[in-house]
Length: 93
Image (cartoon, rainbow, N blue to C red):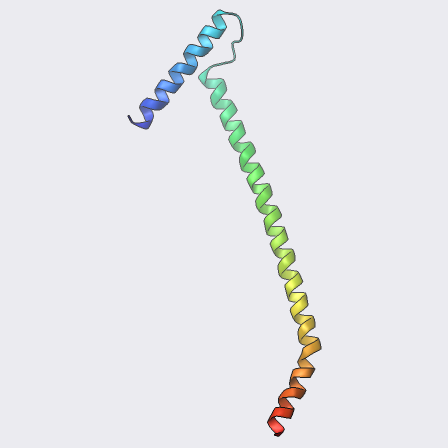
């Protein structure tokens, strides 16, 4: 069975369900248009949530990179002179 047939069967089922509920006076809001609108709205909502998560991850990644660069520069400032003296000592022997 192809996707289009499955989609049509599902939409026909939704229309039938909405029609039956409407006959019983329960609701008139179950139809393919309202469900499609709901799904589109939820899709946009999920895309927004994903973008928010991505922004938080990128921010944390930037903070970690900044932190590691700061550590590397401080380590270079502290250990650089020590390594220079050790190298000079090795070269002199």
